[in-house]
Length: 96
Image (cartoon, rainbow, N blue to C red; front, side, top):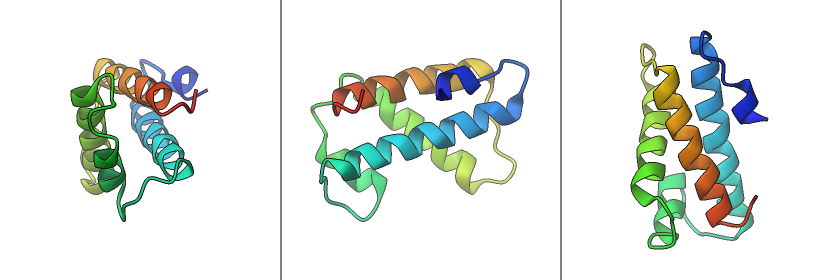
């Protein structure tokens, strides 16, 4: 449903979808018992098992920028690419 919420002409949807995809992946990592105080620490525990490690780290960095910088924005194409990385990461951990 996150993918279907991404709308080309709705900049707010770009942000919301990235934040929701990141939360979903973090929950999947927690559900698998990966240790760490932060999502990045949990992601590091899965290092070497990501199909697209660079892509998921880039997507998570985008999320951090969107969450912590009030004026941060992301265009549709970058949001779409980040969602592709999140989807693959969710497949990698067996969540989908």
